[in-house]
Image 1 (cartoon, rainbow, N blue to C red):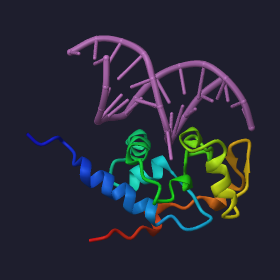
Image 2 (cartoon, chains in turn blue, yellow, red):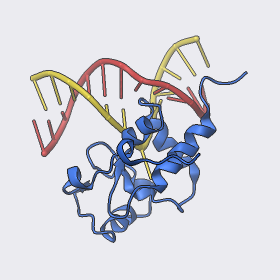
Image 3 (cartoon, protein in one colour):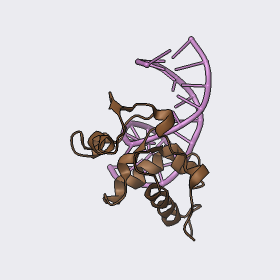
Length: 114
DNA sequence: GGCGTGACTATGG
DNA sequence: ACCATAGCCACGC
């Protein structure tokens, strides 16, 4: 019996999108979920990233809808902020400064692999 | 099947 | 801007 969704396809879409987040920019869990076709799956995006165990993708460029580094505890101490700052992103109190300009919306610019 | 949990989000005060 | 609340939904116990 197939589940009502394709977990592998979802995970692949999430990775695909994250792979395309430009240097010095960031996006949110909800935006990724929406672009992947599951608008209410922001929590699953976080779960998927955490379970990946891989750091070949720019997971530090994924934050919550307010630009806060909600996943920082899964990186080393201060690592997530450090990675962002190394790309020129300013972080104050765990929140990305000038978030409106840093935010990259995948729904507008995503190119899915076929 | 119930219940708590979580790298979430939108809304209202 | 900050805090509380409700909605969300797979997952593990």
